[in-house]
Image 1: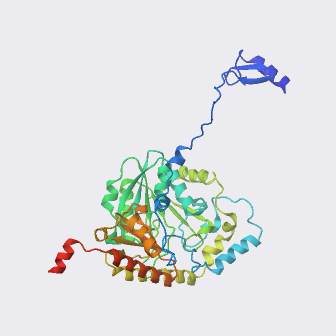
Image 2: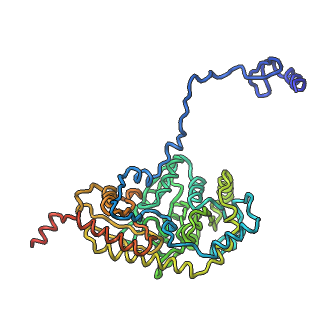
Image 3: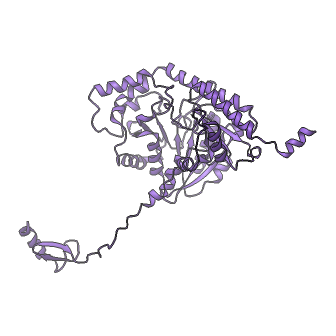
Amino acid sequence: MQKQILPYLKEMPKGLNGNGIQHKTVKGSVYKSKQKSRRQRWNIRPSEMSINTLNPIRAIVDGMKLTPNPEKPMIALSIGDPTVFGNLPTDEKVTQALKDAIDSNKYNGYAPSVELEDIQTSKNLLLSSLQDVVLTSGCSQAIDLAITVLCNPGDNILIPCPGFSLYKTLAVSLGIQVKLYNLLPEKSWEVDLQHMESLIDDRTTCLIINNPSNPCGSVYSKEHLKNVLSVASKNCIPILADEIYGDMVFPGCKYQSMASLSSDVPILACGGLAKRWLVPGWRMGWILIHDRNQIFGKEIRQGLVKLSQRILGACTIVQGAIESILNDTPQEFYYRTISFLKSNSEICFSELSTVPGLTPVLPAGAMYLMVGIEMEHFPEFQNDVQFTEHLVTEQSVFCLPATAFEYPNYFRIVVTVPEEMMVEACARIREFCQRHYRPCSQDSNELDQ
């Protein structure tokens, strides 16, 4: 090896190697003469990205003093996992599809993260080609990739308020500014279109729409979605449509995907198996690229492919089962799930509507219900965090304070618990509010009159 290298070195200008870097030859070895000074001590620092990464829900919950009443069993209405209580199993067809994929021995290796024919041939996905599908490790990774491919540090994105906290967590960690557009509880959480449009500037690169909504349980009408699209079209802003709860809507409402209504606005629609099929642990999500006018072009598609290949994320076995899951799950399964969620939502709304100091907002889908707290009637508590903290201490009922969703003085209830637990939880919330409710001075004067 030395004999092969040395003639090559003799041909170069004295003291330089092929890259123009100074070298010395000592006993046949080549090394840089300008060595950096050796570190004298360890100094390992976390990356800026890790420092900037914050999960608001985790930060708030970890800071709460959650000591349940030992005389009452805990009822957690805070966890957005429909499998926690065991009362909402997935369908037998879904589990059988996974078993068949395992038994086939075809899905034990690596699999592509794009161009999966089983997704493209499934029902009602409005795709033009196999290249319009990117598979991900759950819908969370789909959202991550969509934000990353559209935005650079210093750009800004528009996200709903209240809204799923992951959007902000991902954006801020990437150096992307977050702007919150208001949702209107008095209009069943519709977007405040005027406020949303006022936030747009020349660095706005993405508008996130979550329909049906976490944490609100709202479902937007066709007309409202068209109005949102009009704002996006006017300002040339692409949409990230978080549709993980797509089709999880109660009877009387109709779910419309953003892409089905868009004539020009390019859309990255994020979805997955987690909620509708009740298997969040299977970690199967996807991005559907809707781009009728080729505004995204090849670059965004190629960018998503590259990002999806950083980590081989989507489970191969679930990929092997996905065609059967999407196409063969019986409608009765969906109907039972939706009927249960609707019934629990109505029980919760009906019970809490008559509780002094609370204002629940009736949901139309998903698995959540938001409840407003008239804090002026609960002077013992400074905010929704203290309110929900004491609710745990006294009644062993845990609801997530909506400060976690950038929306103080509300709390979110997850309606996936068994019906008897929902009834019991509502009774405990009523008892808690009756104990701490105080009429305002104006209310007292009105009663005196």
